[in-house]
Image (cartoon, rainbow, N blue to C red):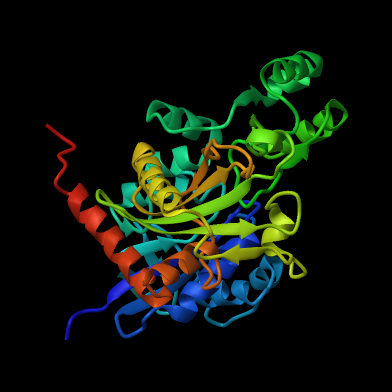
Length: 382
């Protein structure tokens, strides 16, 4: 009988997307094939504290870190991450992890930091490497990679928090000289639409800039996409998403569309229990548009040197029926560790393409091992 792979599922973390990560981690732990894998849950509290298997499960159940830290036990359990070995029993038995599934969203998990630690520990892991993760997290760097690859992106301006604090008036003039309202103001390094605001006129700009500046030192301001023809400046762009899977030869899923219940797909639209935002899979677009979008998704994935998985988001101009011009497609962003519950958009896109949630987990683990094995062909010394 073949030895089971020992898989560490890593979730939680210090980012503003901690709760989203807990949902993703719980979903993977519930679905992963235990006949193939020995599964080790590894939680990271909001404080940055790494937790053992028992406390990690408690974290998923909503137990707070102070409560975990205050538990009394004759045989105190502890977690030590050294060379990515897990020490989590009273007898201090130690077993190395074969592969890690870092289902961490946002800062300190999706930005290359955890990936760098795993590289140093020489452990296989699911998802993009240090470069792909960091570029995929930084909307400013990401757009530069897209532009270098000749991919269509929206007009935007990037400003530093220090520039905004030093001279709001100068920054406002720069934004208004280059972009037209409405604009979207975003922290460069964050996900799940945290810190994003839609700004319709100047009087709303300062509040939005201050909000984004709480979450990152770089602020990206993008010109809003509307419609073509007579709908220019009036129509509402369609939000399209594609899932990408693979390493050097990735494949793209069917195209999906998000119909938000608010002006745009913000944090509340994504995660509020009262949200009526609706995914439409497959999206109602032409075959030519679908083909173009799927190729653009793969090109975006490659341009950022991604691997494993990513969700690529697009904006499609609202179509004016009277216009002969095709609505323009803009590449919005790439997400290298998208939400991963069974009802998240990434798994749902693959389900509609013919890959089940359980099979998707299998493929991603295999891709992580494949990438680690391929890396061994690289010599790091002369």
